[in-house]
Length: 114
Length: 113
Image 1 (cartoon, rainbow over the protein chains, first blue to last red):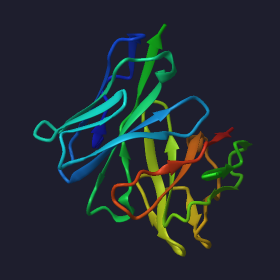
Image 2: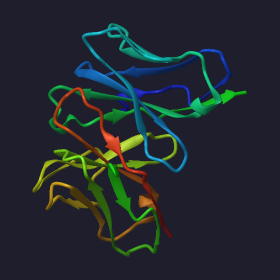
Image 3: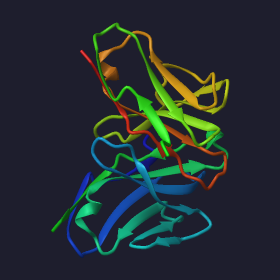
Image 4: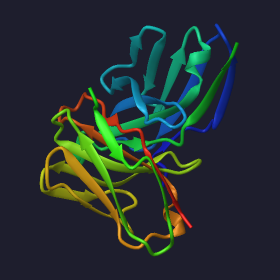
């Protein structure tokens, strides 16, 4: 039972354009959502997060949108840069979960073409 | 400024052999985790710990054991390796504050032949 799903295994965009990565979840207990970025042969690094009491959080070129009624969140990258090419993981946690452990999606490989 | 350090970075095991993966963090985090990453499956939690001397099972614990004897270290053991345990293993740590992220190590690529 995949509680966090990223339905697009890959996405390719042109440099300067917007990248939109999507994530859906099924567990209504999730109340904190994060995006991680992963380069080859490295560990995931934290990118941006959002609490369920908000519907938008922005940090520079990165914005995360949360639609609780649809159980959907998205990550917007504007403008996209070649250095953004990486695998992006969506993750979620629930307040009642011991250890604040995260449930991850499958990941989306983003390729930004110069 | 090390953060989370995993040892070793690469390992090849024969079926049935045992090994221990070491994770060390220098951020004084209470929580530590072991994940495995397989193609098309994201990161799946193997075991985790909410403090020194405590461990708990995650989503895919079978075939693994863990220990947290010191706050800064979290060990993952494979008693009898199987080819299905070929994967990339990531250790992570975090503080108990709900709105902080987990910090990950660089990963250990394990191949069981």
